[in-house]
Amino acid sequence: MGQEIGREMSLQFKRLVMVSGVMLLAPLMMTQNFAANTDVSSAGPEWMKMDVVKKSPRSDISHELNWSYSYVNGSDIHRGPTSYGSLGESHMDFSYVAGIPIHRNWQLRAGLAYERYDFGSLSGSLLPNTLGAAALVLGVDVNLSEKWIMRVETRPGVYGDFKNIAEGQVNVPVIIGGTYLVSADLQFFLGAQINPHFGTGIYHWDDSPVMPGAGLRWHFADQWTLMLMLPDPEVRCDVLDNLQLYVGARIRGGSYRMGGNFGKASGRGELSNANLSYREIRAAVGARYNLMPGVTLEIEGGSAVTRQFYYSGADMQFHTDPAGYGQIQLKAQF
Image (cartoon, rainbow, N blue to C red; front, side, top):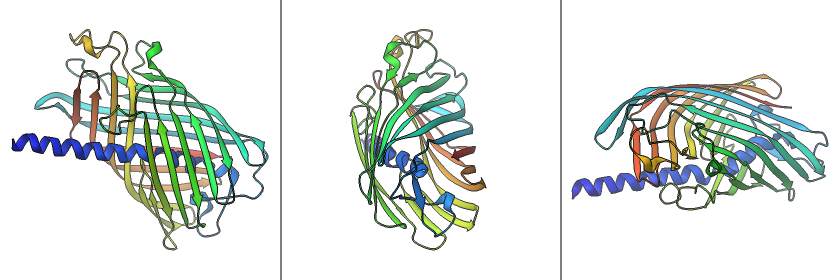
């Protein structure tokens, strides 16, 4: 009985962490990328600051480029008491988005996004070698007023194991976010993620199509800023005009659909076309360096505290032991 209670408490804690991670995704995406249409305050390095809406947004086309690569050392992966060997990981993420002004307070967003996880081969073939997403980026930014910014964005694309691409792997998630600008030092965020095909995991990984969220950004001292926004909460310190150090957490992953032949080789036909949710929680410390105006290099490292795989249809879950990781990221806005 005690073991069952312990397992249930552990499950509830994991659900709470996952819910918090997805809840704040929309505001984070919006505020990270709105810089193309905004001015920044005069306190601290411009390339690190929260944006303040212009009275007259720029009229030319803007560009956002993001590339990152990370590697996680191998660590033991379990399903209950059974070990399935060591699981390493390579992760690559790339996106390009153009901002196209169509009105004084409106801007279209259009681009491409590609993400891929490579895990290698494990005994039993119960987990995929790769997970990934290839999608279009379609959205709109709106200056509702001097204080409010809104973004609506969708990423129609393929989300799966990239082995046998099928109609069931096509998904159209939607993100809606709003930012309230109290001042140059304080902003609040509201948003929601909508995923009717795969779900958002509000209760048990994939059983709710809508996930609401909220967060804030607070520049509470001359060199210090709190970004209370998952999936990337952090505390930042501006040590130089072009150098920032930070400590925080990272939540990575997503929901994917397996191919029609997946699982048959291992005699687990129920895994064919199954929904697989992957979640990774990292503890991070890193540095951001301004290479030139609009171009930022980030170097980060820490621990992948846990990595979890969950097949909703088969009610099958795997998790890993902690492992060290390193990441390099390049961002450009022009």
